[in-house]
Amino acid sequence: MRRSIIMIFALMMLMACGSKKAQTGSVDTAVVDSAVILAQEEMTGVIKELYAAEAKNEGDIDQLYACHVWREAVAAVEKKDSHVAEIGFFNENYWTQMQDSNPADLEARDIKFEQVDIEKGRAVVSFILHSSVQTVRQKFEFCHEDGNWRVHNIIRYFKDADGKDEESNLLEGMRSYLDEPLEVETQELTFANMAGIYDDEGQEARICLYEEGRATWGMIGSLNYTEYTYTINGHTICLKSIDDESGDDCYEYDENTRTLKDKQGAVYYRQVVE
Image (cartoon, rainbow, N blue to C red):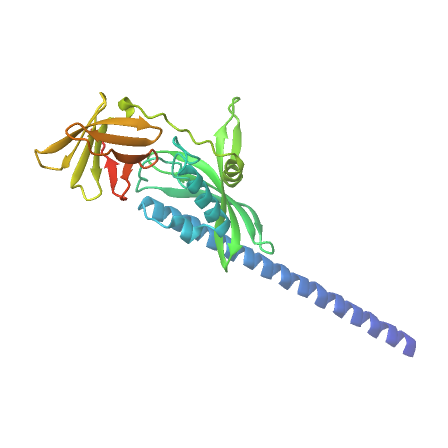
C-alpha cells in the first residue's frame, strides 16, 4: 500500500511538471507573437510617415527612415555620378519612382509582411504605392538599427520580355554600379560648343565667346568692352587682346560645372539662354 501511494505521488509530480513546462512554452509564444505585432505596427508607421513626407516633397527622407548601409551606398553613388557627363545610376526619385515633384495624394496601400525575424532584426514588406500619377508595386527590406526599424533596401518590379514580373534589387544594383570602372567622357572643346555667355559669381563681369573665335570682356550693363581672339588648348581657353600686345588671359574650363576659372581664382558661370 505504501509503495502504491509513493508511485501515485511521483506520477502527480510528473504531471505537474509537464503542465508547468507547457504553460511556460505558451507564454513564450505569446511574447514572440506580441513582439512581431509591435514590429509590424512600427514598420507600417514608417512606411506611412515616409510617403506622407514624400507627398509634401519634404527633405531628409533617407536620414529619417533609411539605415546607414542604404545612406552610405546612395552617397557613394551620388559621388560617382558627379563625375559622369550623362545620367547616372538614378534617373528618378528612388522612393517614389517619379522624376517630377511628388503628387499630394501619394499613399502606401495593401501593406503585407512577407517575413519578420525579430531575433535577426530583419523584415520584408510589400505594398502598393498609389497616386493620381501612377500606381506601382514594390518591397522594402527592413533592418532593426539603433532601436528602430529602418529601410535597408528597395526592391522594385518590372516586366520581362515575356510580360512576367521580375524583381530589381536597388541595393545590389548600387553595389554593382560602384564596382564598375568610372568612364569619364571628355568632350573635345571647339569654338562651336564653347560659344556662349559666362558671368562671374557676382554677376558683375561677363565674357562672351563666339563661334568664329572672337571674344569680348566687359562689365555687365556697360556699353564698353574689350575685344579678343581666343584659342583652345585642351580645356584651357586663352584670350588675346586685339588692341595691344599684352599677354594672354587664360581660363580653365570645367565641363562638369560649365565654368571658366582664371589664374586668380575668379569663376565665370555659363549662362543658360532660353
